[in-house]
Length: 233
Figure (cartoon, rainbow, N blue to C red):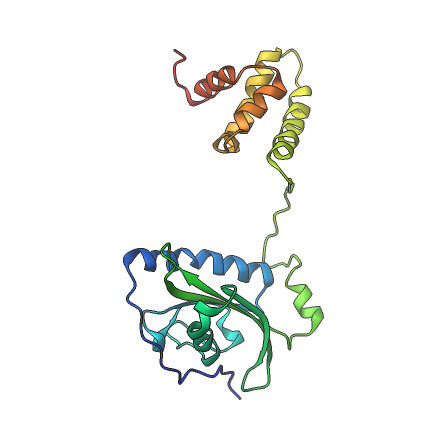
């Protein structure tokens, strides 16, 4: 039996979307792909646009889970959520459990999407196939021969000071291995590492780095200008 989600008989007016609204929905495409990659091929992620309810699916990843593709209509449950959206306490509904026509059980989450004016413009739905054996589900989180897994070190700081401290410790340890290099050159190299990582774009980082290195924030700015190849006035 073909997998099928029940489509809607509930009447909902199409919404006229602005170019900005459409851009918001398009920008969520990579988000959908990222979620699907994180959870594997048994996780379907769908983005609906309200501009045409009868063809609402504008982005779908792992559509084999429900057998849908771009251009499919909104479901009855999603339509019901939309009609109640303005009376709900949250725009994220779930987790809830549904069953496809072929008996496949799903665990789902639906999020109402709004523009900057609070107007509902679409929905994002995540559907996870619960019929998959646990071992197969877990296998999707492990490296495989088909995917090159890149191992890298990543820290998850609880605040900005911790982020700077960890980066400083790593940079200082690296510079400490260099011989016959002045303290000024070491500081410049540390500042360069922060600059190359893009951390100076975060408000407050320059002051924290300056304090930890025992130099002024203006010295840090001068180092940054040198890194950029700008002349120091």
